[in-house]
Image (cartoon, rainbow, N blue to C red; front, top):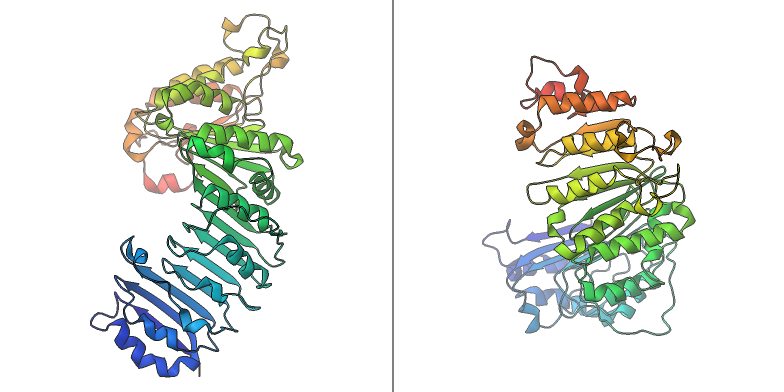
Length: 449
């Protein structure tokens, strides 16, 4: 009968790894699953180097030790390099093996996950060999692995026929590009990239012929016609609203946002699509990047939904973005009767965070409806953008009392003038019970719109 072998040091107090392995090793020919989670030292693990596991299907090795442990230790020579012909799932967390043995390759491997391997990490060709020799591979995850960098000329692009999920996170920029170029799933369901780069690295990461292919993949897998862009002072993310996204963190967020816009503008997949934009934590932007960032956000095309989450530190910057939506774009403002408004298709706005921007937003709405005569007669009625239809006011719980009833009433009136509605939390503001203070909402009422 198959045998599942599980050893977690936190649950096996008083039993050392050596003692455990000595007891179970005689039955290694029956092991179907091996799940080891251990701390501090690999003492006792050498027994694993002497065994054969001909029917092993699932391998999970997790090791938690000091960062420099593997500087003074050799990688694990797992099962002395013997094959694991039935292996279907392999997860290695912070524990390296003798990659040159090629043990993780095989016709049945479906899931490969490598996490936190910073010493004795596999090279790019070794990773590609696993993918190439595992035709049934369904999921590939590589996070915080110091894959050998450098050029690998002549490495062919692979198109694993069954690879549906690919997750790459916090890898060196050169490695990230090479993996994206060399592994191209033909029909991915989930493709995620998350990495952190500084301004000086962004050129290498975003060089043409690399990550833009992932953005195309994200767009093709979108949920309906919606594209999501989330921008903060230290992060830019584009998502398809389902399972795939590209997220790049670091002080190059504005450069990355411009790159994302370039990808959207050059791909037919993004034409005439609806875009949701969320902006927050602009206090993380350096002062000289603020104008650049606000202008770049304004240039995002086809925006139908905007979410702002101001706080005490960045509300002025988010207010400046909001105010910029109240005027036609400067380059078009001199044209008689014809004006291009930023976010011309904007239909839904969510105001959250800890600071109220309602008073500023009311002025923006008035101008976009043509109710403010300060723009003068040169703007004809047909040049104004369509009215905003839905406004959600969803502040942080501790900020409810900073959103006044009078502000909400005025907002409801001006949005109603354009045929729209205002929601406080999840309930129509005009239907909010007058005997219940809005800053101490009834949780039952809040659950049902």
